[in-house]
Image 1: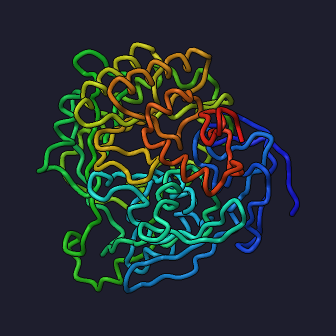
Image 2: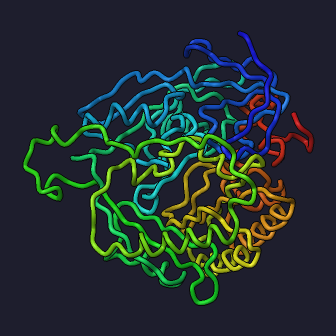
Length: 457
């Protein structure tokens, strides 16, 4: 099959690496015969998880057929290259929705499994793979196998959150959730500081199926951690005050008119002054919404999808999205320390998001654990950013937390070992199904994942 050697990056546009690309046209063309291989769906992981410098990258964007949809039970079987956007265009009209969704719909189904993605409802419904019924896999020796929570369970839980390092995910069978309408019922509540924000997110009288908080990353002093908590659920027919038949309320959502950034923003565009002004405006505008309101699901779940190539906002050097989780017991103190460190650095995050997590993810390398997660978008201007991120790692480790591998571009191997205590358990499975470390990525080599006897396989 023809290959192309070219430079690619993740969504953060850092790092940029030379890789050998192969694009199969159909499922039957998927194979694991390269000596070093990683699978790439839509390339929306932020760092180097879907890069394989000087090695093979298997593109699955054309292996994207939806194979079966049980509209009675809400079960979808599809090839792993299909995107959430393509799935939503079909299932919503049938009265179903994704059980868990990340903040963009332009990601592949296989990528959602490999990263065991989470959404705004993790504290109620867990991670993506808590709803996966079956995986069809192609292993390093070419064997085609199925696995699930009850069949070949060790392979399943090593693959879930395993960042594509256990094999090629070929097909996914997913349990969907029912909806009556495509509208969301949403409530916003402003918090003047981090303490009040935690109280809002922990208040059972405010809690909803989905919850997320926007944080002003530049706020300091008594306003440290101020922001807007956003709660929502899928609106019912009764909440719309409409007696029309169920099917009449299931139509395509109308997303905001999509605009595309035509050029890279200059490095100076995002600075403390410009982001501070935006944050003040956004806090007062969104925090001032006193009454519940209706929203389309697209605007609620995927606001940034309305801006094509929004990653160009951070300039040619790109950016790092830093996402961590801190266990519940030390979450408030840890998040306050992180925000203090960030605000003191005068390196503002254009986007800072706080979410509540439920139970520990069951995947051996799954990111979520019971507590709170903070995500920051930080433009790369100079090496000082990486020194700051090392300090953030230290804070996260001190509080027993971890960094999300799907967003990472620079974590150390030592920190990874401390953050992911089930790594050795995962490695035992990896050594059995891929003894020559055929499935390898730039991320895995940087973090020394899959090493045997102290050297790369």
